[in-house]
Image (cartoon, rainbow, N blue to C red; front, top):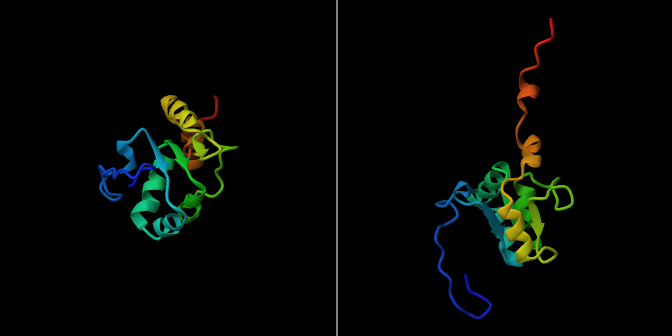
Length: 125
């Protein structure tokens, strides 16, 4: 990646070598063309789906929209999910604060059935 000052910042992982489970929160910051290209990369789609499913805070640029659509995460939005932060409306400080608060437990029913949905409660005798 190249910083705003032109400094090259090396990657610590490639997309299929650093699963989202290794991170407390993720930021998806592609260029306008990069978001569409990432949506064609199964590893990138799976990374985002895993991060969402692991209840991580996800910061993203509008250019990441194709990735969300391809991953089937098009019903979630910042106004309905406190763990989704759309830049530049959200700030880096917002992202850090949300990530510091931990997982987004309110998202859990969206990504897996709750035990009561799988095993009905035993009727009272």
